[in-house]
Length: 274
Image (cartoon, rainbow, N blue to C red):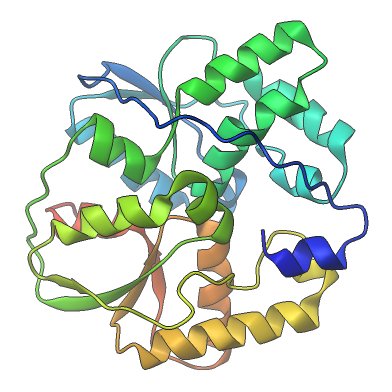
């Protein structure tokens, strides 16, 4: 979430998680994983979820998709509605009973699982154990492809220039920008261009964009202007909340530039059909 969000919303929860030790990754690929699709992927970008599944299945991994999954609870939690977030989170905990990795095509939702679920259930010993176990086996998609699957991508597309955008929470909690850069760096015909204000919020921030529309609009205008000036042919991101905001702003500005989820971009560039 943007600093502006926490400064502007009086009851917003600001509980910083303890610093986690460096992560140790498994030596081999698992046979099965869960996919937590996220509500934004489910409702607005189902293709990104399908392409994430295709990428995992191509690695020889069976993917389970619990049908009862919904929101991770982040919008309620960051708006200060801790009890409501706990209720939503408890429903998600019950869905991932097997000890398989949970792969999430969103760094911000993965960060909610990994960094904040244990804090939500600190006073509930039974659920705390579940939350800690879930946190330990939660991976953002790019992180999982890079460090667990150890993919070696062969680019099959024409030369292109892309700008990588990562959500602020995904960047700071999950290092998603580093994982995305590494995967794009494997694609021989893809040039990742630098753009000004790369680390800044796009203005979406979940409920922030609803509560503070004028500030949000100014932020996305600044972000899209810099993306356009970068000379990129396409914007790539691993977070669909940002993708929805950026594409909406670019469409309103009547710009040709558009964004796409990293999963769909990787799938197409490495031989998948869209």
